[in-house]
Amino acid sequence: MAIGINEIRELREQTGAGMMDCKKALTECNGNVEQSLIWLRKKGLADIKKRGSKVASEGTVGSYIHAGGKLGVLVEINCETDFVAKGENFQTFAKEVAMHIAASNPQWITQEDVPDEIIQREKDIIASSLGKKPPEIVEKIVNGKINKFYKETCLLDQLFVRDSNLTITDLLGELASKVGEKIVIKRFSRFVIGEE
Image (cartoon, rainbow, N blue to C red; front, top):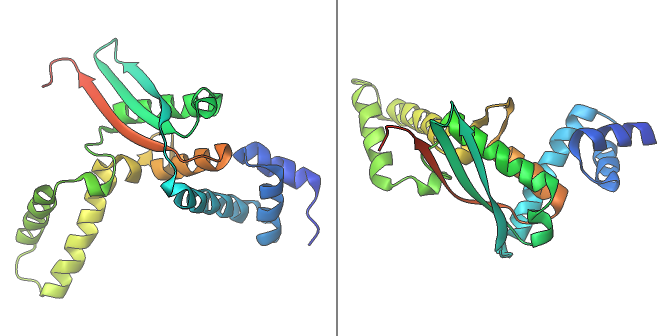
């Protein structure tokens, strides 16, 4: 199937990916734009994994203040070069993530950050509420509810507040694909007046 320049340009405008990446995605997906979007997102995540050994020592601190100054967030996001850190896409991403943290109140960045004792506590609470079900059913229900717990409390697993079709990991993958660098959300703090 021949892929036209208009289709490539349209996909590029939607994703910000390079022209050749857009052409390859459309070719691989037989011209289907929706499938091409998914293909590009997966490619971005694959590229992130390839860049895993790179050092992300540059970056920015994104901020967001809401509710008349009663809620604020600071988030440190790192990348490999100062050039990318100062770029519009990176700065916008930092602001979007800070705003998301303000709205969604994650407790941790990744599943690996959740302390073992908290995971065990959640599993115990879930299992004790199930009564006398067979162990294999209890295990399935507990695993499902723990995955839901991660989606509610871990930043990278949360659905983005501005687009519930994307997780924060998806957004990070799109940015990493655009800029061609490793991107790491290093840490964040959420401040609410009156809370300790």
